[in-house]
Length: 293
Image (cartoon, rainbow, N blue to C red; front, side, top):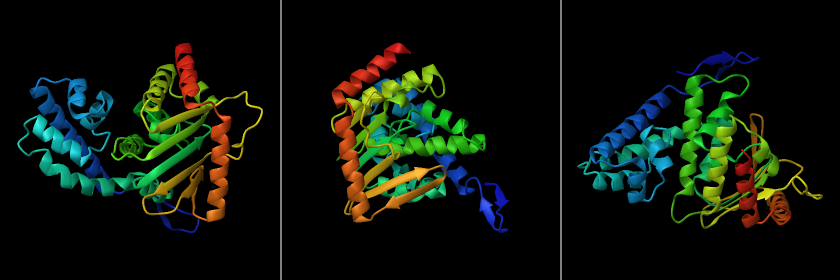
């Protein structure tokens, strides 16, 4: 159950999570345990199972631990592959319902953006301090939440990590949206969580950067001109809607739909991409940094 505190005006403010979200997390963990049991009964490793259904070993591991929300289509495929007799397939509808509840695992100020992200056909992200959320490894995300001030409870940390990992499902959907990221080089130098965490995180960037339709560019520290000194921002185009801008700072955020503001952000992002290293050179820069760790 979430803790409640009083605001200065005397209103109740919930500081953690609604009670039913614990049930959602328990449900995803139960599904994960069933998948693990069936996989081991079939004599398959996580890597082997992932290859059979077109998913990575890391994702299968996360699903089995309840950290990632299983896609309904994955449950159907696993049901057939592991001879589950409908045990997993029948849970697909329940997973869809639980995923709707799971959106609340995000902070309230972030939920409006997430609802657009889930239906995005284009996503462009410029970041200056951290690896973008859609690219973070589980260990990196956990390290970020563990160093938050004021300190978060272990329950909230685990719930937020699971929510962040669940967001990354949009990278695996088909047809895939168009994704691009421009990341400040300083982010590659900052060993948040430790060197081992950063090594894994940089490998994750290389893996994603080599996927067709996904572009990662690094903004070098030695550039004499830089269009992004005003801070990080995202441009997102939900299906059937016009493009939006999104910015956040501390625990505040703003969705921008004014055409003139969005147009200005678009121009700025285009300039950033021109100033940054090319995608190919960026991957080489990430590999170089990885070799230094």
